[in-house]
Image 1 (cartoon, rainbow over the protein chains, first blue to last red):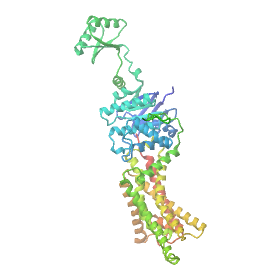
Image 2 (cartoon, rainbow over the protein chains, first blue to last red; image 1 turned 30 degrees about the vertical axis):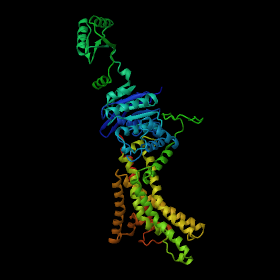
Image 3 (cartoon, rainbow over the protein chains, first blue to last red; image 1 turned 60 degrees about the vertical axis):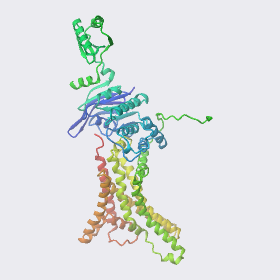
Image 4 (cartoon, chains in turn orange, cyan; image 1 turned 180 degrees about the vertical axis):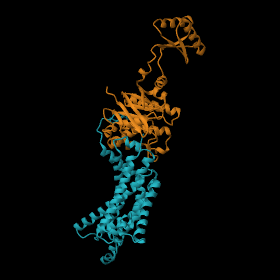
Amino acid sequence: MAPVVRAQAVSKRWGATAALQGATFEIEPGITGLLGSNGAGKTTLLGLLLGMHRPDEGQVEVLGRDPWTQGADLRARVGYAPEHEALPEDVRAYDIVRHLTEVHGLPSREAQTRASDALYEVGLGEERFRPVGTMSTGQRQRVKLAIAIAHDPELVLLDEPTNGLDPMQRDQMLALVRKIGHELGLNVILCSHLLEEVERVSDAVVILDAGRVVRSGPLTELRRSDANELMVEVDGGEPEVARLVAALAAAGVAARADGASVAAVMEDARALDLVRDTLADGSFALRRLQQRTSSLEEVFLAADAG
Amino acid sequence: MTVPTGDARILDRGYRRYDGPRAGTAHAVRSVIAHTLRRILGLRRPARAKVLPVMAVAFAYIPAIVFVGIVALSGRFGAQAQADLIVPPYAEYYGFIISAIVLFVTFVAPEALCPDRRSRSLSLYLSSPLTRMTYLLGKVLAVTIVVAFVTVGPPLLLLLGRMMQSAGPDGFVAFLGVLGRMLASGAMLAAIYTAVSMGVASLTDRRAVAAAATLLLLIGSSIVTGTIVFGLDGPSWVFASHLTAAPLLLVGRIYGESTGLPEVSTLALTMGALAWTALGSAVCVLRYRSLQVTR
């Protein structure tokens, strides 16, 4: 399957500030998290993907098109929800969604139906005729999401969609993002500076740091980097974890406490037998035994350190 | 007991894929025009948003309605009464409604342009098939249509009223002549005021500031040109940059009627009208070209 986005050595400067420096990555279909701290270049990258800016160097391709030269055609197939407030306060949610669906090229009658359907989809069916100004922050974020999906885009760009939301609203928004990507089948690029958010909903990730792509790829691949470690989880809490670390060390297996579990280093094939025997001899209540994977935070920190 | 009919269907509100045709930029521009017209006229918005447009339209049309009414009533008192009736010539009619036109243009362009920048919804437009210039085209056309509603509509109503009382132009050719002048005058006024007010409105995202600045520019131009021409005995062509009187003088030239304003050459008046239109348009275009939407 062709990549949704392909970027090759893309650079963009704003005056003296280098927003992107030689960014090279590919984004495959599905939900992809664009992760980076504030100022890492995420919003600039979205601007480039939408053809709003021209890269100083390098090439960008979105849905097989050059955003700068084929911008109008491309943007008809892309949905965008900006990070900032972007809705006129005295206009009804339904009216603005319908209007922008029309602007994206859908016939008026179709836009009317789809505006309602999109607002129902994001949970604002009953609220759709309320002026945006009377809505809460969470509801406004949903209206932006409805605008982004109403014209049935092939790609949806969401810039910090959980900004300003309380924890419950955040959960609901992330569930919606997951639904858009996995149930409705739209490709999604989720921009966020929150690791946990990206880890919860994304299939793949592009990590940006100071305008550079430091890691990119499917989440499963990025997290599979600790193949030589075994995670052992036992009942009994901290004392049992400490007792197991000591028992493994006595058996000649390097191990360390990792939260509520123990990470044991598999130096050779014999180590697995040693772990099994230690667990049996020490009468530990085994809860889980699996190959250890890194959290996205560890991937991020490792990339940052590199 | 309710018996289900054969037409019964389950309403599926679920999200569906769209495989139909997608219209291009022209469709998007049309949508912007329709949305902006609704916004300016206060449609589908709270009642307070309708007050100003209704007032301005009423001020522009009331004189025409009154004149048409007088012409109609005079017909009841015989041909002599109708002949004795003094109804202002078409060109002079603009003098009656210039205040309404000024009031209208001061709020129309700010209403069309400012909210999109203030609410930052411009970024939603520019992430659609629209570009800055096609977006602006939609806005310009919407404002021009609305302004033309008060610069073309009332004289047209006057013409129709006169014709209904057999007091209109003599013959079809004369009618076409008056109609052509009417449309040309209305279009010229709409072009100048649209360009000037949009140029001003593009410089701020606050509607009230834009409206006040437009009004200030219209009044300021009359004070400055009036002072130069009449107070300092400056050259008369300076009067061509008077933003309310000079366009009315040009309307008089289009109709071939004397409007009782100082004599300034038609060329100077035309150049003045073109200069204001070009200046307003240039400010607006340059402002939108350099506007930073996302970074």
